[in-house]
Image (tube, rainbow, N blue to C red; front, side, top):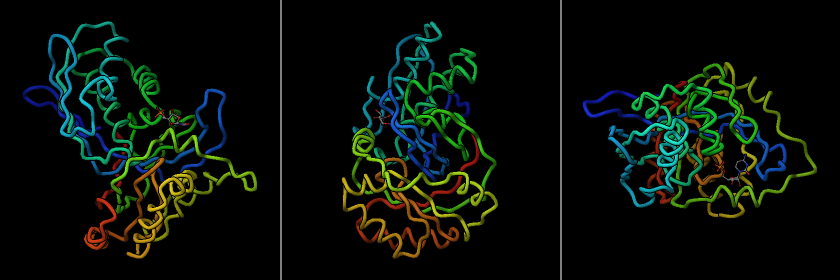
Length: 292
Ligand code: C5P
């Protein structure tokens, strides 16, 4: 996690993520879905600045799409830290969103994990990594992953994390169509396919290890069919990306962003330039980011 000291406090970069593999194993009694996913942090970042104050949490954001109040996961993360530690500190937090919102890239979850780590340091709370992990899981299923970053195997409802060895750095092209998808709605619409068994994550992992950018195994996301049924225009986005010569075109999380692998930076830049002309959404290059 990239957190540095400044003259006024701390400045942090919170990376986005891609789900290289996501399979649903079943529905749980608590309403969540049991899943197995390979998550990867990538080089698109939200920026957070933290200043210590005597009391109260104040949050400002650079876009009305990210609320600057108790609804924001950053605010919730700061509040849960105060509650848990029983301390009476305050913070002025400024959030600059760059990771697309509601795109399946985990920007809000990453902001929350970053806030836990940064304020634990700024407020000198000395909460352990295990304690922060527990608080992260309470904030959201994807939040604990961002305490680790890099490449991780995520299980349970997403909160059981096994860091994996670094994979060959890859260059991705990510298209974020201008529509925000509700994770809750996508999971609600999901129906298991009773005619086939689950995709084999072990096979995926064994092929991913040691693979170069030219022989990466196909990415997989069980939720892609659900989201594209809800938002059929996303199929066109995926088609355009394939047409641009990109490989492994797949949705991340519950969508709506799609990603694919380019052979290198030059190819990625060309694909970004070409796809940007088509009006299918915001197109960016993103690279593998190692563990926090
Ligand atoms: O945990 P989080 O609040 O991010 O999840 C948002 C929603 O996504 C949940 O309310 C739930 O409906 C759904 N979800 C799920 N199974 C998961 C993760 C999320 O059903 N493993």
